Image (tube, rainbow, N blue to C red; front, side, top):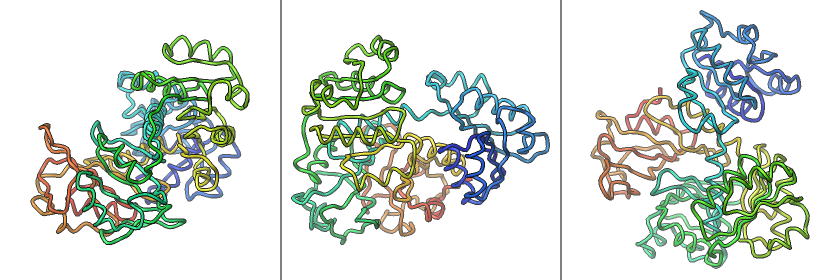
Length: 458
């Protein structure tokens, strides 16, 4: 497929790289000379230099009648560029256009995208804020992604004195029959693997587990029995979109929690304070140790650094941890900083750009029956929601006999709307036509896994 991507920042660069590796013909439009040069030197794509909102620049990229472009993805950091690029592309006959929305108001409803003729308009801030809320609620988790109101995937590190340490997965299930969970991936040091029943967990392992949300605390206790504490105070530094959305969620869902937000911009503090009715908004420097101590950092169950600087956020999260915060979270944009979680005293690093990149990549890879819920870039895996078609060869077959390739597991089944219709399957479970299934698969076997379920990915 010939695809034009407007914007070669962190998001556009990663999307272009992934889709190029998938075999698509990619044209990248970028005005900044440094970013354009980086893309030319490091990616197997065509680069057009210029403003992606200009018709003559888009024409050079193939956005013209008969240009053969099937999809335009506008993911620059400027809404006006993204929206105008999509509008021009539609006028020139491009069948499908997708726009990043920096302003949250553009994704409050689908009216904006519908009225502008944009097929998909996405913003990562709300999903990132929800992930942060989940991480704060579940003290031991270093990654979280909810699929619906009932289930999700969480990552926990196994403590030395964990009941799961030195125990095979088969025995772990036998000893805890009331806990319904599937460990889909284990990160051990620099390596990782999809475990089987005979595999044994070790202290230090990072386990990615499908589980029911109403059992998340019991599962957290299994991996980290000493981390479970009721969340009473959260401190956030940075009153931008992510920090504000996180505070909104916390005051809405966790009404007994003391939420304190700090920002160095006085006007921003005034504006945010008028909307956060149950949070304390403080004008000050989030790196000021005395301020943090006076506001009770030592008693904070959670600390979130969500300024506009990745480096500042990482340093603040380390500082908060040293001052006694039980859990510190840094929000970043640069993908390569994700690796630092193994080397610095920070509990979790959340990549806001990764959330957006995942949505954009999945919109291309699975435009039909399947949709990717999360790309777990750090382990090279995807969680994909698919609907089992009427002619699927998997219908009526017990999962233990299903010919899924090695590297793929079924984590959740949603069947109709009846009570108990959402369940985590076992080897004796079987599928029905119309079931919505969440598939976990490494990137290498995701296409083959979809074929085994009779689901087309085109």
